[in-house]
Amino acid sequence: MTTGSILIRPKSIKVGLASNGSDAYEWFGIRSIRWEDVSPWVHIDIPAGPMLHQHIKSPHVEGTIEVTDLSAMYTALYTTTINNDGGSNHSAIEVGTARKYPVRYCHLYLIDQNNNVIEYSLKDFRVNRIGVDRIELGRETRYIIYFTCDIIEKV
Amino acid sequence: MDVNSVIQSLLTSKWDATNVTTPVFRQLEFDATSPSLQILLEVFPARTTWVISGLYRVEHRCRITLYQKLIHYRPEDISGYNTLWFKVKDEIDRILRENKYNYTVTGINNIILGTWMDNIPSMRLGRGTKGIREPIVWISEQIIICTYYKDSGLTVS
Image (cartoon, rainbow over all chains, first blue to last red; front, side, top):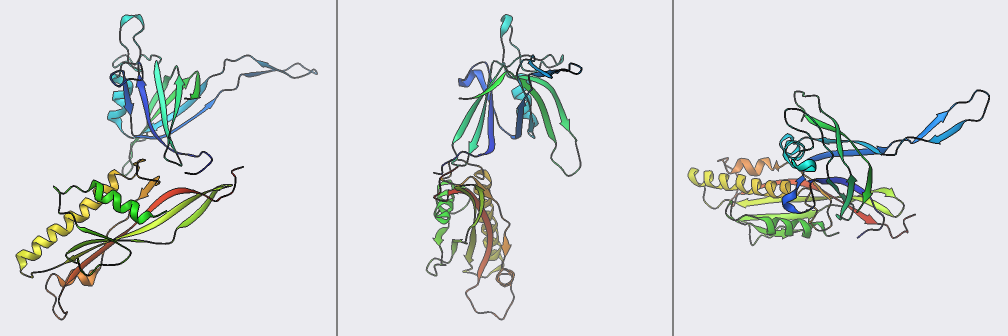
């Protein structure tokens, strides 16, 4: 067991209504995940005056997930119930209309250098855009999910 | 880390005897008393790379050698040995592939898979080349790399 903490790879993402088995789907096949938060500061320029930085924009996180397993991604985002507000069940992306809904439960599992599972909670995970990164001869196709969420916290 | 023992316990615990007969496992040195189907595990010196102060990434190479002694030399026997030979290789590959990222494998983060390299003279003999003394033993080997992280004894800072 080593000291320090180094993350070495993603393990899975669990999406659903709640953490228990029947209400969540554990999504494997994640190639990579990255995120960064956005700047809340807005610079207001005053001619020949002091520069003002105002904390105006609401903080949130934007990121991307890269996956290669299409069927796992389809199950996670298109068929797993992640929100039942208003009495009807929704998936993160609705098949047919491409309407998107906030994911009520989204946890990210990463592996550190001691093979411990590190868990992060992605509050109010929402899919922004989804796309395919080039279908190319001789290369495994990757799907990219651009997401946003309010905050990412270590559990 | 004793990578040999970790890989041996992985192979023995995951070996599916319904796929193929379980071979004899040995470490460091070929055991001439069990030559009919033997897997020998040898460990090579590790390569260490600095990551942060106090923590190193280790790439530890382990050579897996498969030995199979031919007892009968009739064509149908050779054919049977051949089938067994490839089944054993496939079983080793299956276990390593399925447990490459198995984070419950003690202490190892990733197994970088190797490719089988046959000892060509030994393989050729089983197909009828003359001029060599019996017994004929087929030999094939692959080198896998096990990566893990290790403390240097310094304080992480």
